[in-house]
Length: 119
Image (tube, rainbow, N blue to C red; front, side, top):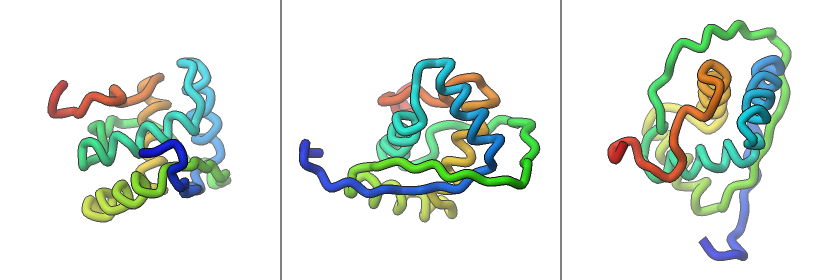
């Protein structure tokens, strides 16, 4: 990716309480939501899969929703969307899963930059 790479803004609507819990958890580990979602997108491309196995998050949806957005390099966004489509999901659903897992675990559910197969 070059410094002048074209970026694509992806917006996700998730449960407002989940978004708040996700942001609080990330703040507690020194990561902002943009960094977390961008890292997640790169990991999806790197592994060709969602980079963690789900655990029971025990989260009850409140019904209210909020939007969260991230800018991702165009080429990464396209490849990530292709991987997720092959898995039968999309970025919105994947980010909801990331938020649930991060909140349940109290930290990011994957090690950035290290494919699961190598762990």
